Length: 263
Image (tube, rainbow, N blue to C red; front, side, top):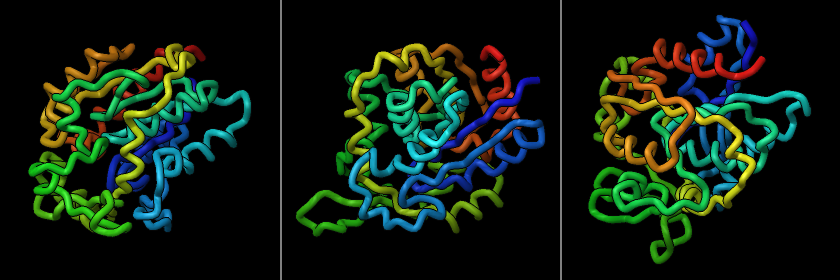
């Protein structure tokens, strides 16, 4: 069995901590696993209200990839809006990425038009503060109420249903202690990632979550159809957070996808 290096990128409000089950199981099976904290997330001490752009938010991931030895490649694994960070990293460092995996994640081709149905669910990309967004999220206006919000945090009463409806209660409890506000200005840039022809050569894998209350499965299907991946897996009993609700199957699918890579 060849050793693979998986690099995990979290979604909004989360941090590298959310991948602890996957990192542990992969390491036990002889692989490498690195869990990145993007700027203002996890244990990174930056105030998320000061994160100014997608590139600023993604800087810890860029730093990691830029320091890899020239002959090493990694498998990037993203969750939720973290898919935008992984796509941006692929565009910047195509020679460092052997595969990109999107777990219920934003998989949008750079330069592509996103249909209204997807923009609805990815409000945290475009920050269209309408009734639905205001209902679920608490916004912080770090630059004053007359300016756009600088960070957002899901209201506590929605966290269980939107993120962890099928996850073990202990993981939900852990998450409520660790979730942080997410930087709004970072997500504004996801729709503006520059086109990069080099990423067409990087295989993409999509993991669909079948019981997702945050990113409805039918909307995931629309997204996948717009930019078809090389491989497509279904986690039928997973909520939005497959790393908690179906970690064993996610682990199995990650290794199955990775096995398609040339040694």
